[in-house]
Length: 468
Ligand code: ADP
Image (spheres, rainbow, N blue to C red):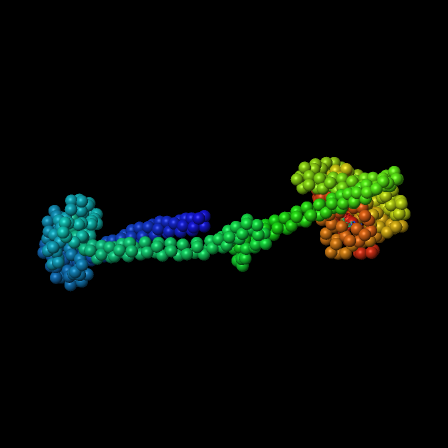
């Protein structure tokens, strides 16, 4: 319906606009033409009058002018389409051309008065049942005295005929042109709007649940751009929905594992009477799993609140070098059991703007991973320097590392590499997702560079306070 009505509206607007233009065009054409034709007649009347006046002067204003002489000297006077009268100074006829009999039009008062004042007058006359005429009354003076009034006349019929023909052509041609162009407009609007139909149908199929649908377009015009924007939107939607499904599946799986362990161990221990030590062991193991579950739930809650924009981030100056020093101490504590060393290779005094608590959480997570995925007796190198207005913190370990493909996924929720699962039981796969969120809310970036079996380097860049 929308499509059809746009088409109709376009056609009506188009046709209406064109009709208006045609009307204006036809009217001006008619006016210009009639004006030009009348000017033409007036000019030829004037030429004839001037010629006749000259001839009259040559005849020295004798009372009996000879038409034949006049016609001989000025053949244009004898042309059939013109006739003339010569009036005396009181308005009495003294001479008239032969073709005058049916054109007996008296000299008007206006023309007489104007002639007395030495002025020529043009008049159009239409007497009932007679041919329409154009008349020029032309005074002939000798010194200051009015000697004769020469009136030259011509039929307006050829002009009227021509104008009638013009009107006829315009009357038929204009509506025809409007009709043809409206038809063309209708056709073109239909063609232009056809892709909209395609988009609508695709949208309907998508609305029915098929997110794999895409609109096929090859054009790069407005509609083509709309279609590709639409396709992008659906692709994003599809990927978000896939992520959400994956996320729910992963979350249930991660929560299910500890639950299964708790259930299994509890059932097993309840099968027969056990010593208090065995119960204690079971309870301790269960507590560990419960801790793990509550950590997952806490981290999930954090991420979903972050997604909803509910987490406020402070914007205060933070002495990053101090923070890094504290984190290095924590790394030493974390790595003590496995004899993992954490060293500060370089530490530049650095101030950034942000939330100290969140930044501490971020660094702790990265350092905790570095310790967790290091080999026993390994070393972790920490460097803090400045680069292009950014604080650049890198944490290098020499642990299990990861493949290039894995590096692209470690910031996804619940993603853990197989080697990480084999190496360290603990871990939720949510830590780096939280890290990424913290870095990005501080207008920074986090990157990883890693080689399987050789170690990983995480590089965090944050704008320096002076730049922020
Ligand atoms: P986890 O709780 O499993 O450590 P994270 O989100 O912190 O979850 O990390 C996601 C995954 O990224 C880890 O499971 C591991 O596979 C990989 N990873 C993170 N840090 C390192 C590292 N320093 N060395 C090797 N792999 C790492």
